[in-house]
Image (cartoon, rainbow, N blue to C red):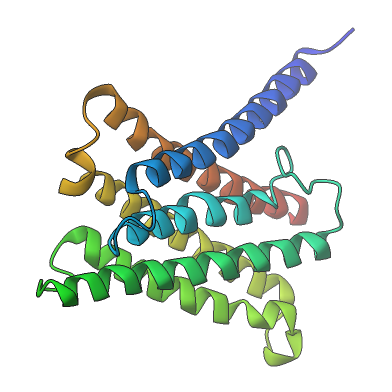
Length: 222
């Protein structure tokens, strides 16, 4: 007979699996939605929303979900392989974000408009810079000899904490982009709220994944 504790544990596990699957679907659907809306290639500006959404909604989310114990598509792979996949996805994320930033900067230059005058622009710029620093900061995890005097466990904790902050900044940048004149001119009503739900839900899902992973490690160590 299944105990009450085991039953709760199963329900919790199923809820985590469904949440992870939902996050996969939402971040992919949101990226496709913005891509259809932006029509990349139709103008120089069109590359900005497409590349930024691809970077922060899809690639960065999938890079973090790689380590999910419940919904990772690489769940059965060894941790080293997951780490390599994470690095590749993060490299693609950084590349897309730099290209997206370049597209909007050059577009503003051509049109004689001021740069980074909105919260969306400022948060986006800060996020792209931090993504670059986060990528460089991850090198000691791959080549541990670069971090003399630092334990691998401590480096992983710092990387996870800074990575979560970076992801939340990326989600905030997407939400601010949803509030932009370009987006609200085309998307209104319930569609806008559904669009806003995507980065919001993904942010809570990733935050829960990271915090639970390190809380579990602390419980095991205590």
